[in-house]
Structure formats: structure tokens, C-alpha cells
Length: 212
Image (cartoon, rainbow, N blue to C red; front, side, top):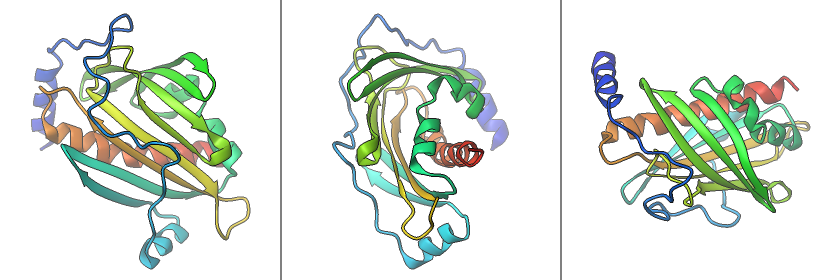
């Protein structure tokens, strides 16, 4: 399977991608955004036990055109510390292996717009994200910045951080994402990116937050 993915990546790497900050995205969203103040899922006794043991809880939801994943992790840090890591975009190349570049290009009100460049599957993927950041309400949502053309076809998601219900000085992190890649990229790659991304995102936030 690894050899097949490698061969596929080499083929896809010859395709020209089209990220362009001077051109609008081809559409203004094909995936439903998470909206204002997205909720959180109910957790079973088994899932709560997994979290208590330091494990990661993952959930997958089938949506029109694809899947929407969620990861939940308990972290030994306060929400303020966790948010300071999530919003440290300039440090993402240090925090996240696949991120080679990241920069904020606009901030206004609740909105933080950032450019990301990923190196994955021997491909370089550039995209622009419009985050709505409301730490006083415990969440951040995002969509693509549709005023700029991204290599991703669409991406929406959210972070939620809240004080742990029973452990002082701990927090519970929720991360959810829904991604659509360009039409010429096989769905297997899209699924793999989402599933791997769920684990990687919570891993790096936990690791960096618990450093203090």
C-alpha cells in the first residue's frame, strides 16, 4: 500500500496546482461550515475512560460528499495556554511536520486570516484560511478565505477548548475538520489526510501546551 501511495504521489506531483492570492477561489464554499458556536458531542462512559487514561477519542461522521472527523483530547494545561499555541501561526512549521510555511496576512475583529503551505505526499499544497476566533466563548471556527484561490477545494473546521470538568489545571480539546481536495486527487488521499490530521493536530497541541 505504501508503494502504491508513493507512486500515486509522484504522479500527482507533476500536476500544476493553482493557489493564487490575487484570484478568487472558484466557489464560495461547497462544504457546510460549522456556524456560530458549534456544539460538542456526547461522550460515552467508554470514551470518558479513554480520555481519563490519556487516550485520544476519535469520531467520524458521514456527510454529503465525504466524512467529517473529530478528535477529543484531555490536556494538562489551561485554555489560555492552549489557545496561545493554536494561534501561534508563525510557529506552525516548528510545531507541525507537514507545515513548511505559515503566516497571518490579515486580522480584523474576530477574524484571523492565515496562509498555509503543506508538504505532503511529495506535493506542495498552499491554501488560505479565514478563522473566526472567540476564546471567550471557547471556540474557533474556520473556512477557506474564498477571496483567494487555494489548492484545497474546500476546508472547514473548528477548535473548542474548555476547562476540564473534574481536573483542575486541565482542559478538554475538541478538534473537527472537513476537507475536500481538488477533483483530480483520489478520495483515498482525502480520507487519509483527514484521519491522519485528526491525530497529528491533537498531538502537537497537547505536546506544545504541556511544555508550558
